[in-house]
Length: 288
Image (cartoon, rainbow, N blue to C red; front, side, top):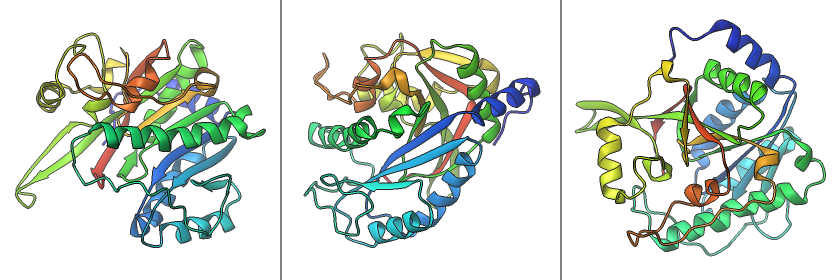
């Protein structure tokens, strides 16, 4: 999936800018041993376009060989930081936070989102205390549980916008999920992660209405450029590190008595958040 009429000059300038920038990619993972090989491939396709990189992985409570596979990766790539418990880095010892596993496709309740807040703030704290990493330029937050494809020209397009507009705090991908029903007899594409999306239109919507509306109508074509929003995520978002330094994820109960997404709480501390319609993040499988 790609944008056919994407501006070539913008892509070239954006790619050059990213090649001069340092990036940290952060994410959470649990019980995904068979998925590690694909994750490594997907992340390596991204980091090779930056001047320097680090990959910070919060692993907790896995019952399979997820941590072992991550540590093996860290042994051959010094840019990998496997964390989770205490101050241990790249430790083979199990990280047991005694957090309940998230049921696949479960509705977000306060215990689940509070768990996500706690886990995401582990990588925020780690970066801030790391003398080298806190000097990096950008942070990409990604859902490591997903099976995905990153449209690289879309990433370069984001590099262009970040280069020429220093007021931008965050740019979310245009997340597209490939839905399959009735043993693949019916397939269709939808906007990924409407729960993290907040704009001037859906301020007072219930989660159920927002999900339905997103499935039917929330689609962004490549030619829409940057779309200003209050919050988004779509499985992959890039932040200017200076914009999020000192910030933390949070959640609370909104006026509809619903628990808000941790990304919404995080983005309420930022002024300029956008979706880049060209930065397609194609989700082929949602393992969450």
